[in-house]
Image (cartoon, rainbow, N blue to C red; front, side):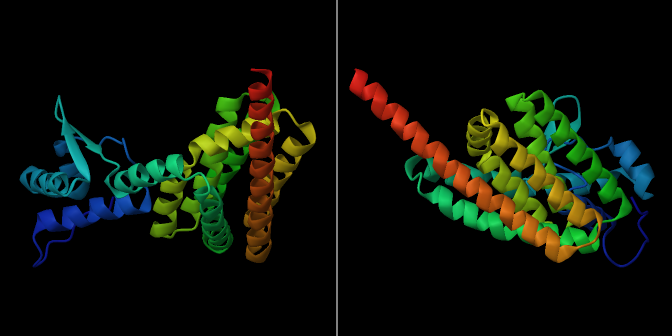
Length: 250
């Protein structure tokens, strides 16, 4: 953190802005614990009462939560109400999945495009780790790890876009469709050719970003979402046939 320069604005308000920026940019994520008041005050070069006042302000806004033992935790305020509402809608209206994939197409394509232009060396290092985790998870074919690595890879790209709305919308969307990502990967897991295509698509996106090729990154991302759409459609059709066969047998 950058130390605060004294000025006309209240010190606690400046601390609030610093913490809000870190939450918006994803440096502080939901569930993260803030340093102690003492450590935060030393880091920013301000008094503990100023830090305490800033934290209380963000607690009132719902962005922080104080817990037993004096711990202060970042909440999921920016995403929770959106997720709860749309999860209910998805359960009641499965056809919305197509609209979500259309939105994911726009969001992830733009994220990959921006990441190709804006990613720092740290971002590229994080993307390298994220892609490596995807490769390892796919190699062992462990569904839970595949889902975790897949979601983390796409979120790392969003973070490399350095656009706060893309970062938070991506995180929210990926939480929302986690069940569908799991279902789709379960379907693809039994199809070696399809699973191989999925791995190739992740590699194409990562390679385009790493080589600073925004148009290629956008194109690769769109190919990936189109493939996901088609595979989810095939998965749903297979599930429907299975249910029909069970009913006939019964």
